[in-house]
Image (cartoon, rainbow, N blue to C red; front, side, top):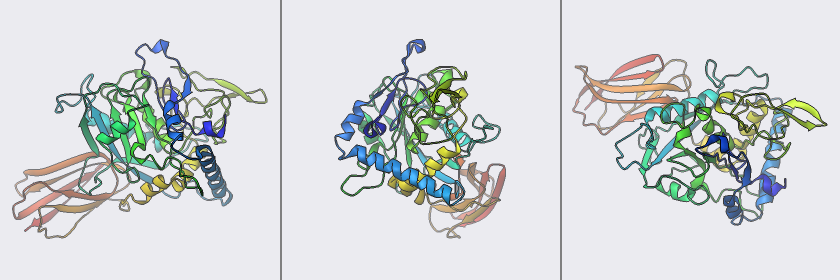
Length: 443
């Protein structure tokens, strides 16, 4: 495959995910008739026409990734220096005329529970969490040390639950022509958030993930730097999360997004999108083609001197059904860390994630106390990513405000939009199994 083809968009008619620069999965109603072929997308052809020297740009990016990985290996450092936490905004683009109707069979305006289940799955898979489907005992299996959480601040600094709902009277979207249309409905800066657009349906496919932008080369535009508004993941709502309105049990564990986010982080299919191709990761066995089946049976390839080797069908970057998948490898982790350093938007997103340092135990700190405004701002620090809940109570125990989110890191939170009479209140905060309360005065 030529270098230019190597950086193309792929439309992957079949399970789990799609191609190198974007991933698409088919949504045929008759599963037995699905064709598991990948073809270069007209969308890619449209994009490369806008980019001077796209093939050279793409190959230079790949070369820089490999050089970065080798440099880290040669100096004998840790694969990861720290846990990276990525804020997510989920844009629900639905066609439910009654926007107040949320969740239920056939409703693209999916429930908060379904959204939260997908964030949980991402963290289980990217952290190789014991006791979950994301755990494995593979000797080259890696904890990617990347965590995801629903954003708690919008682009203007206002409190948010990280979920945006937009109505549009359209049932099926075309990846070849509708990406900008969807983004125009709702978009947060892609150098500060991972945008995930959840759609009613996608014609012929399940989802799409945009490959990272590369650094600039003299005389050439940075690859994908011209497309920040579509930088993220687009996915059909029936394949989002592991609870709620799901379409097919073979793809009902939330691994479609795990795979798509892998492409967003710069990973390539294990077979390199060609016969016995390369994904630039030495610890994923050379593979003739995708596991284009609905089964987890072993498959073998003879890519190296006729020697038969087992395909890593359990890798998140194969096309296996969700139940097979549970592995990222150490080399895939090295590659992602390189991409997060070398891709301008990815690097900026990680650098501008204004999170507080975690603490072993829950600690609360109220700002500007006593409080003389109608906004209460406080920080809560604790260990890792936790489900959190906080509430404000008067001294009679009545709850005057409450909020909760399923996956949050240590951060700054605020309470606003509630009329607070001058009085003493109790702020109660729960992170995981820990709960702390503190009194505060509103003047």
